[in-house]
Length: 594
Image (tube, rainbow, N blue to C red; front, side, top):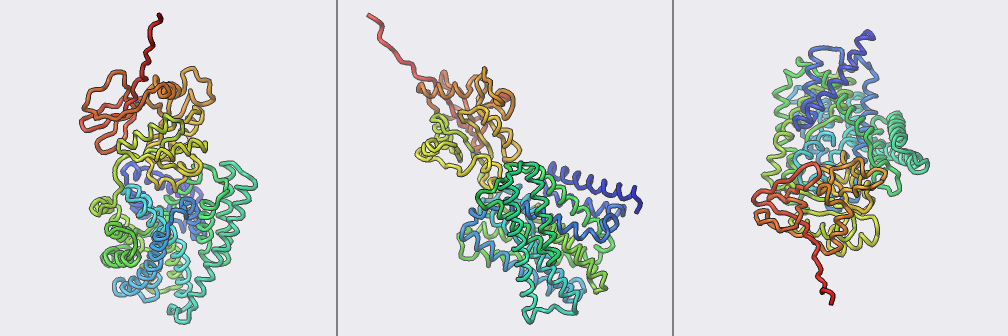
């Protein structure tokens, strides 16, 4: 290819990857549903985006390092403390049963379905054991199942990727080096344990380096993110040099360590890393799908649909039933876990790399591995994306609609407001910085968020708690403003703050950050002073007449959604709604002087 063609191919790949994800976000569908057809179509129309022509044999190594960065970022969102005993057991059994049953069933039926040798069918079976957080996560974000179900599926999807990739590499070497799969003498089991040991050792080295850079050197957000990328890529590359695909284990171990070991000085926000991961996902899917030709899909289309039916209707339900048996999961939760197993980026990456190697060696049937994997990915993602939401509603595992309020502040009037909001039927979570304020919240019987506010609210794992609105009402106006700026792009719903005094000379508060609660008249010090003089919060139906001298603060909708009155918009109550009001301070009468 000429320099101009390479430049055009790289630019077109980036544009297609970005544009597809923007379109998917507007359509509210997983990005994979758009990325794969776009890459396939572009590859069929032009050959300038084919990765083997743009990068040549280096593409496989680039994919391995890119997937390592994705898995490291996924590991940063996993909180081991939330993986309770039963949940941990379910995840472990899903991994073991899923890998074994998917491998055995696919390896058994693939020779008949696709007319391929048993060793190639075994390679295909090991490729299809993986799922992936990049596919499961967006579907669950749309469905909003219970926290327990979401946690199980995210953990399974994240951990199965490196395990499946290592097993796939072992199977590839066994297939490529002989005419049969040598598992009778336990050789492959020993090789797997050796690969696992290399990956764990690399993860420990990566964790130590991350501790040095993030904790000892105390790098800021920009340099800290660059250090993380350099360490993850360097350690993953080193592990892959020692043992193929062990870098994925090292990457996810390092991510888990950083997110769960106390003392890591992680930046509260990771916009660059998150943007990079999003771009990598788009580039990989567009590039890999562009290598699949229409001619390669036609012979395997109908058999692939049969394989998808077996995986979805037989294998996954059996795996979920065995993993969740005798646990505290409800029948609906077990059924939904059995209806969620899409394939993602690691399946595509391993299929692209391993099938190419087998094709080069002239292994019969190897050319069918990538198109079959492509069809399984597209089929499972489309099926689960389109059916997950109605299935979750039918099974009763959708999180109840409503607002989970994170109310920040510990002054008496804020705590009383939290109690009143809870009495109106809302789920209220509170946070305060001072010990006495936190004790006051506990004595009021309100749920208290643990840890540092920004780390709790911004960490990707905190999103699992389902906070849908944040109200900042501390006695520090600058803190409220700064926190609202930091949090507004990292929580599921809107962020509001109480207004500062009109004559405030704060550093930030008068100028920016978050919609102002209750309008310009009920600013923070006015609320505190009015409450201190005896004004109280009350709850009444919206149909009842508004008492004199009462101010409307919130409208609780009939479906428990919370609409606050703010500086920018007025809230109109409707029949069936509930109002949260602030009454007037009682007047004191004094005897006239004699």
